[in-house]
Each structure stands twice: as structure tokens, then as C-alpha cells.
Image 1 (cartoon, helix red, strand yellow):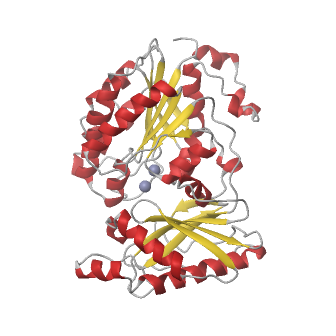
Image 2: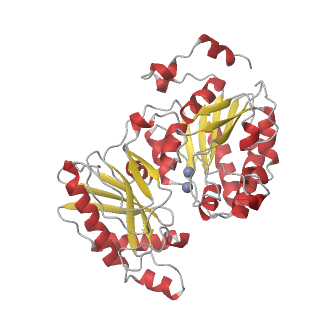
Image 3: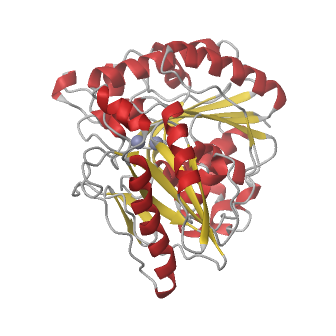
Length: 439
Ligand code: ZN
Ligand code: ZN
């Protein structure tokens, strides 16, 4: 049995654009190290989730092989577990953003111009925690990275999660969140969509209103205004959850290296250990540290899930050059040194993305993402470069996100025992089995 290096580059996929001479961001970027891996391995493209634009949580769960219909319980609980907040079933957890509003109702920016420091976020969170009291309920408001935060509300009785988002950019369809292509820049009123959720909705609205009261005159915001920066004066929320999903264990001896609480939370619930990382600084040093930590972790654990943030942020900002550079940096400063340390006799390496974040879309899209799997003895296909269009010609073809983990586990000769409860996923036909004997 081999070990797995499961590496995911957040928002890597893109679309051809005239700004990049008809190429996608990944095609345009110089990625000699990833190209070499593609040439030595097998390649394909992945429809993460039925061609819709997935959120990172849906995408990550799917890539790890968990069926959303069965396991998705809202993003809030994953985020709460990810930052180590106390969360128990019956509490209500929501993913929040600090945002900017001129009047407490309309929104000027959903992310405070993306330049709120984690230190400022922490000071504001402390003020919220100390000065707000909710009717018949307690809460914990924990800042995450930059504008991101998590709210956990606890009442005497169990709280329902059937409420709408106050963040206008996301809707909920069949219990699964979706990024909306168009929306009004207003803070939505939180509404219950089942009878029992009235209390939850009222608590969220009460929190939203009181948070504005605390934040609008806070010294951090006064200082930001003076510097000409956007104020973090409102909190918008989404993706409520009231249970921790019971994910079957991913396997023996797995660990995660990731920056965001969301990925960490999912991994923790899936039974992975968490490798602590310093906060990203968006410089090449980030990758040097991550390579070092990866190499150390390879000695201790069998398999690693490494989630690299970067291209997604530039995709959201529509910054073509920034995204291209971010991809080139990852190739040069992460994969290049790491590949020198990986013995492919023992390891299977996977490189893919959780979703596309094309600069032309400025958000996530349902475009399929490239996938490569490389190990010693694998029967390489004819793909010579790692990109959306090249990988599409590879021998893995076009596969579903839910099949990615199973596929790489087979190349590693690992039993995919965590799929045990789902016979559709564990048993595959002899003809399929034969395919995987060829290397
Ligand atoms: Zn993502
Ligand atoms: Zn994103």
C-alpha cells in the first residue's frame, strides 16, 4: 500500500480570456513542475458537483468522498469546529463576514475591502462579545482570518437551522448553499423557512442589529475611516447549521495542512489530525514553511491533505495577473522543493482544485477542474502539461468530484473502507478493477 499526498489548490480552475490571449489563468501561468508531474502521471478533469458553482465546503466534502446529500449540515458547524469553538448539537453555528454598510441596511462591501487585519477583527469581536446580550440566549463570536468569523448561538432549547442568510450573495437550495450570480447589496432579514425556526431567525436578526450598534462607532472603525479604509461596521451571516455531521473516518493516519478553519473543521470531523500553520502572509515564505511542515508531517503520517489558498482570492478580485502569479508561485515555491522530497515508490500524489474561480467571473463557477495523479509505475497518458484543456485529454477522462478520493485510493492500493456503508461506492465491477491493475 502506498501513501497519499492529496493536494488541492483553491480556485485554480479558470476560463479562457482575452486578457490572457485566449488562455485560462492556469494555461497562461508557467508551471514547469506541475507540467512534469502531469507528463509522468494520469490526468483528467473533474465536475466537482453537477456543474454548479460549489462553495468550498461542498467542494471539499465532495473531494474527500462524502456525499453532500447524506452529510451536508451547513457550513457553520465546520467553521466552528475548525476554529476550535465549543459546538454541540442543538446550538446554531453560522459563517459570518464583517462587512461595510453606510446605514446598517445597504452594503458597500461584503468583505470590508478585503483588508481588515486579523488583529482588528479580533478587537471588534471582543467588543461584540462583551457588549451584546441576546434575549434568552448566549453566543460566542469568534474571528477567523481577516473578514471571516463564526457565530455560535446557544439557547435553552435546541435551535433550528432552517433560516435564510442575511448575506445576500448566497442562497440555499434544497438545504445546500449556492453562490448567487446576481444579488442586491443589502443585508437581508433572516427568515425562518420552517415553523420551528422562528426563534433562530429572531436571534440572528437581533444579533445583526446589535452588532451594528456596537461596531459603527468603534475606535477601530473610526481609525479606519480616517485612513480612508472601509469600515467593518456590520456582520452578515450564512449557512446555519445545528449539528456536527457524523462523517465516516477518512482512513488511518491522515493529517491536514490548511489555512482556513473551514477545511480544518471538515478534516477534523473526518478524523484527520491538524498540522498547525502560521497565518499566511501571501509571500513566497508561506510556501517554504508549508513545504517544511509537509516534509515533517510525511514522517509522522501516512497520508496528507494539503489545501493551498491563493488563486481563489485573485479570482474573486478579477485580478488576472495576480492569479497567474499565485499559480506560478505555488509551482515554483511549493511543488518544486516538495517534489525533491517525495519518493514515488511510496507515494501517490494528486493535484486538483476544489472549484474554478475564473477572473472573468469574479466568483466560483461550475467549470470542471484539472486533475493529475502521479506515482511510480503508473501508465502515463499523453498529457504533457497541467491545464484544463490538456488534462481533459488524459486517460482518467471526465469524472465526478465524489469519485476523486476513491480513484486516488485505488492507485494507492488503499481499501476505501470509509465508504463501507454505501455499497454503490465500495463495490466496483471486475472490468473496472482491471483498469487499476495496469500499473
Ligand atoms: Zn475554495
Ligand atoms: Zn472563493
